[in-house]
Image 1 (cartoon, rainbow, N blue to C red):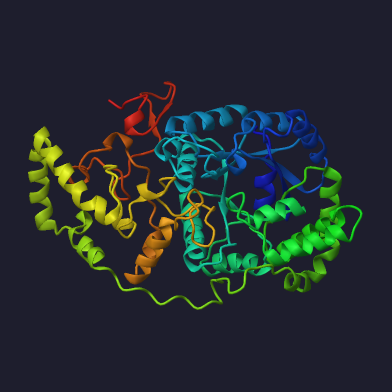
Image 2: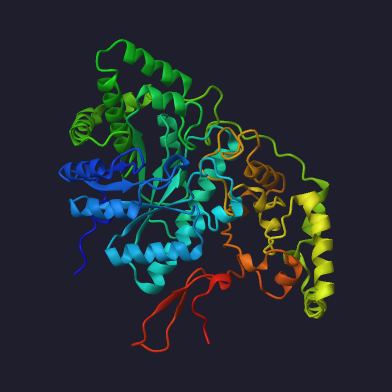
Length: 504
């Protein structure tokens, strides 16, 4: 009989619970993490320790090893699995390892861009977080692995494109198989309320953990600058913490524990499934926060009105006026006409026959690819990936995103600016604005599968009409289950360009 999973049990029974983040950075000795895990395992209501990977873009301890050791000390692990530096096979192998170790809880995230990396982004991100959720879900469905999948969302975005796209992307993650969500960092009860309302109005009962970070002054100062990506604190909150530090002999410790307890009480009142507590591993402090939050629970509405640290004129999904849509550009209107997916049925069969012939003539196929790139590169930023999804991204090439994401922005955007290149606008802002202009925002919920990397540098028109590429209506499966009989061992094989096993 499989061991019980406290996270699944608590969320299924709708019992408010707690998870503590264990930051497995190189700066923290593993022995210290293991000791913290053994102490945290004794805290009532604490269902898991969430073990980070590549937190802040810095390589740390192996989260699987740390999680396995934490479990041996009585603390159920929730393993952060990022897309950083992993291709499809690496991810599959990691999931195979987790299953072999009996670890069920996986936090599927894109991951922060590696600090100081000089590598091509193409080698760093083979999948995005939505595709990662889909991969884990496929292994769960096809191989019976009992994974319980969490996904990230940041309601703490204060421009319309950033905010709306976070929610659109969460819907994609839920559709792909995420069982529950965990918010990123913020200190604004109105945003916590907004996220719950968004899900409720769409009939989504997905449980959500609210992130509660026990915030010291140095971290607050970094967060106010958007460091690490996805973490944010207002200048007003920083000043408040600075005053608390100056007025106390404990460097503001009691004040920040009190703030954390108040946030937990607010989350419980808003109907969140639990609190995801970070910034401190000490079990006695976690106990104090839990006990204090229970005492504060009847006052949660009053507390919520006090904890609204937000930028001035920040965007709120249900409160702020939406911007007037821009006019659709000339080139976008032209692209809608020549988009392969919009080809009339009568013409499709003719083009397919012609392109099948072209494909058999190497010189002609290369000439077509060069002509295609000559038009698409200056107009759309095309990078010749061979799996064109411009029509699904309002004619913004996903390869222009430093992380090559295909299903929406990462959580590291700050006021519409890119996490990796802060002086550059996030490409997904343009996608959202163009979708508004074309009245196609809802279509941004379409799941875009991973690309077939073997098609790099080939004609996307040939690949499309000959059904070689990877797109929503013709996805290349992330996982293929191959077996010839009930007694034959089942194997997993990755995408076509990296197959280990081929179906006969």
